[in-house]
Image 1: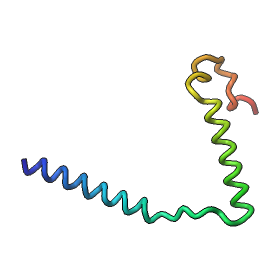
Image 2: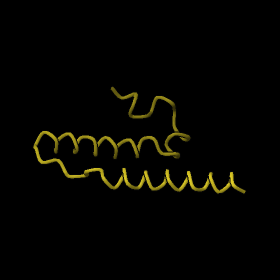
Image 3: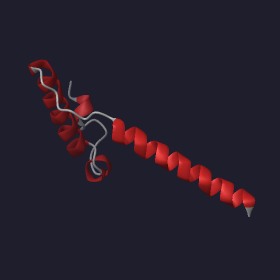
Length: 71
């Protein structure tokens, strides 16, 4: 019973630490033009990846039909 109490208290401490660390992060938007262009490029790549590597595309097409082979 004591071991179970110790386990749950440790899990609680870890959860509180994670909440504090994530809460303290600064998620301010980028202010420079260079940073905005980097963010825009990353957003476009993420959008293309979501379309290219979804389950339907991965399982119903030839292995060389993905965007990773169009270079």
